[in-house]
Amino acid sequence: MFAFDFMRHAFVASTFIALTCGIIGVFVVARELSFLTHMLSEIGFAGASFAAFASISPLVGMLAFTLTSSALISGLSVEKARRESTISAVSSLFIGSGILFLALANKSSKYATQILFGSIIGISLQGVWQLVILSLVVLLTIWIVFRPLMFDSFDPVGAKANGVRTQLISVIFLILLAVSVSVGAQIVGSMLVFILMTIPASTAKALGRSIKQLLLISVATALLGVWLGLWLAYVTNWPATFFIAVIEVAFYLVALLIQRQRA
Image (cartoon, rainbow, N blue to C red; front, side, top):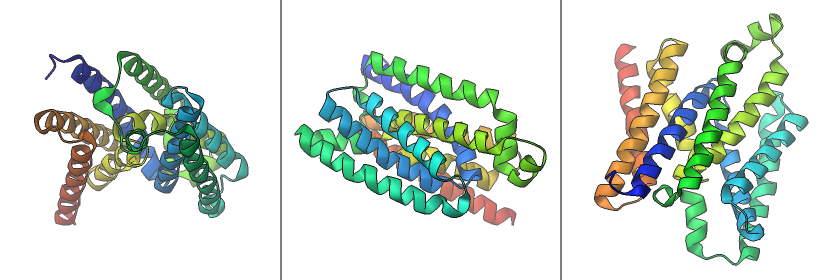
């Protein structure tokens, strides 16, 4: 399998994306932002469609749109009570824009399918380097703000009472989430990126009993999912995204069974 350049590129890229999504996903689940992650994946579609229209890199388009939408959300409302309505409004705007840009770009349905569901096997060496650098930036930033982010995610009331700048942490996290969604979409596509962003973390939530365990389980299941998915895609010539989705859901169902037996 590793005799082919495209498989080596896919393996490296998927490893870094799984690490990033596995770690940030723990905070997504803790902060109850799964709906926001789904919205950003839809906005990523709009960004990639705009990139096709403007003849630029899809990753650049995704980053531009997801970061812009995150800035809009953080500026309009960071209060949980108003978050869902704000997310819905922003999401509707960008989905409509994505459909328009894709129509104006006159791209084939195959290109749209690649945006929506990913094309990890076809990733270039330049694309690998872009994903690795962005993943390292996200991971380094999480390491820098880890303590206040952890405090604000798992005990927001206590964090605010102890002087943690919770609004600033929320804005930083939204930016990290936007970048992570854009990076993760290169593996499973803009419509299914929430798989890697939420399912491994949900599996970890069902099994883990500490922050360390949550992070380890989430990263481990994300890595196993993409590695096994790539191998099965190579063996069967079926889409890697399909296998990644099935494997991650299987891990989650097993975790739920284990959780039920513990109770």
